[in-house]
Image: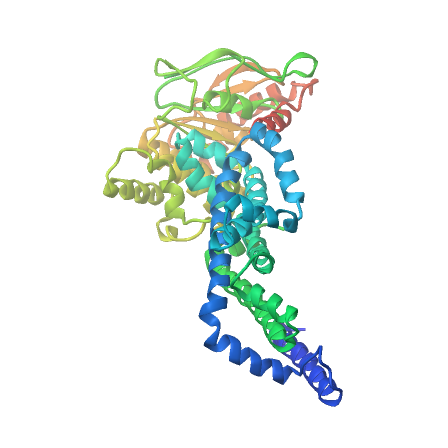
Length: 261
Length: 272
């Protein structure tokens, strides 16, 4: 199949498959009355009513803020911690068991205590919770990315007397950047999950809060509207990330294509 | 200018110790081009890294203009064999050449002048804004050479720099080294395993033994300058020198611990 035909098929499938599912759902719910599965058209109307834009400021904006701030903190902290752990074998050996321990911790286990530790059920606690768990993909990928740097590159810089700080800024970080970005993408997806989770517990706002409250009060149409919104948020955030990545890492695709096998 | 005194390098210790460099003595005078030739795996790279201050010798010392080398000296530049791995793929040829200049106290205009002059010397002015991976292998090695030149070293160490380019390109790059030496008046220590290359380039050749390596013989190359890829290689003296070096290396039977360089590589990986 030619490249162009493949692209058309791929994009077609990306649109056609969800459309077909929605259509089937619509036809099924139109014939049978299903309280638990409202018609897609009903959900769409509710979606428009809730999110475009009467509740947008009240619930969507806080959720986005939490994702944004939590993700940003995680990226900065993950890279900052990853640099020394990637550069020093000794530090790596000492730190790894601790990292593995906290990484293996299921996030809900820490949700109640985050309220106490942060003494807050507002943004502060939510952002801290999101940031804590989003650090790991960035951190581990930064470490791996740095450990995988070709020693020739670092020796070259050293032989030219490039100072340590400049070596980190000009060689270590750019060389590890493709892998750091891969970690950031995982973190972003994780941030959406953590946002919903943190809003389930001790919360007064956010998309996750709306979802839970609707379910608790048997308002299934807004519940479905919230589910749809969360899916759309995750999808769009990933899409935006990929767009930025394509620009920032353009060199990486060119370089890899130029590598001899 | 450069004195290597009883240099020895052993990797590891105890039973697992590998002696890569035994006892190397060599003096290089100002403006000279010395080729270091030896059987493969004899510890040439290790020797060069010790000279360049990237590795600490186990015994002996390297003295550059009266000062003992413990770190990479400022007046020395190193060109590695793996050009593709020593260039930064994420940035332009210009920035690659600029790398060693950024931390030098130079005016902005002076920096770009040095970069442009160095790229002009290797004939890559047109490709200043390309990424290194957009260039051929030979051109990438030219970028690495330009970077070394821009650094304005008084001595250039080259570690089998043309081992992975085709024969045609190799000839061109050899002539480039000679012209660069003429233009910048730089002293060059050139490590190679190619005997023709060493005879063609050198003022003197240091032939090394197997690991743990020592200088087996120092040969003065009294071929006329400027050298020419065709005329020089037709001279009877060229053939004689070539045969002489060849015999010296051939007589070196592979010995135990022959993989000094590969083990050295594994050891440096473990250190970093």
